[in-house]
Length: 202
Image 1: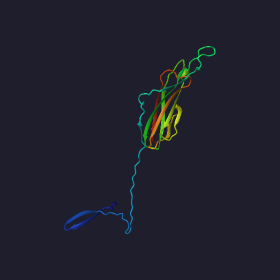
Image 2: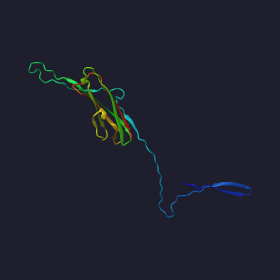
Image 3: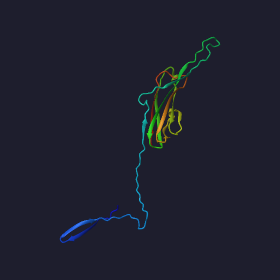
Image 4: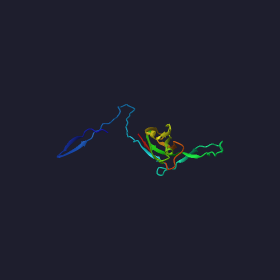
């Protein structure tokens, strides 16, 4: 309620003088005969963008084993060739490593900015350098309506890309990591791939 400025009145009764303060107010009343009166109020507050990891990968601290994919390296179905010499049997060789894991981010925005980076190690030979050549590929399967990204080379991984969230404003990603042999087979030794997935709510 709006208050007018203070007004001071001095009243004298005999020899005693007193002071007091009178408060007056202005009423917001409708004119006489008006059947409807209305007023309103406003409220305002901005909710900050939020994003956190909701479901962590099971292998975020201890690496999960890759699955070995093998393909025949050569040979024929014949036991003996025309020269009566033994023919190499069909032999399985490790040509690809593959692993998959989901992660869920709890956000409250219509889109998020996604960055995926990786570092990796692999065998390094001095002599048999041909079979140490590999290609790392990554598949990103989104739970939202965003088009999935398949067989992406490391240099082409999302770097701040705008990705749609689902109906709850969240983002689930199932990441599949692949290591392919560029030549006949994978070199013997240890292979590791360490992914960092960063989601930023704009």
